[in-house]
Image (tube, rainbow, N blue to C red):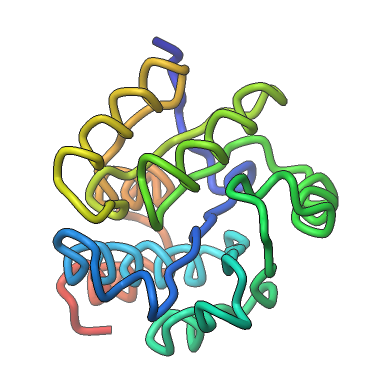
Length: 186
């Protein structure tokens, strides 16, 4: 199992396909939305780029409003492939960031999240997937997806563990703002 120590200067957060037509059928979608919003707010506070993808947005809709309102570093990338890396604009933008650590959230664990994680690992990226911020239509599909992702070399980590690792220390100037996000006040 690879060891990944997250560094906010090398990290990038990716939100995979959190769109209205998908959210209607996802197991524990409220948890996924809450944890993804939490990570997105922390990433924005720490100036970590956030990318989002949208699977066939003309048919499936755009990123849900509560998340799209938080996307400040880049507009969502539309895609037809299940792996985000098959979308050239996404792949090029990712390469341009020169970030090597990718934290994944989104839908569905066993399909688009998994295929994106596998592609990133194949390209040499350090991949962290937040099991509390990804899901599928069923708990079984989610669990099997996470097992496959972990077995491929991605590191599972709780969203709060990721956030605290990005922050690094309580003597950061933004620590009070960070705590407000942790407590759900921001």
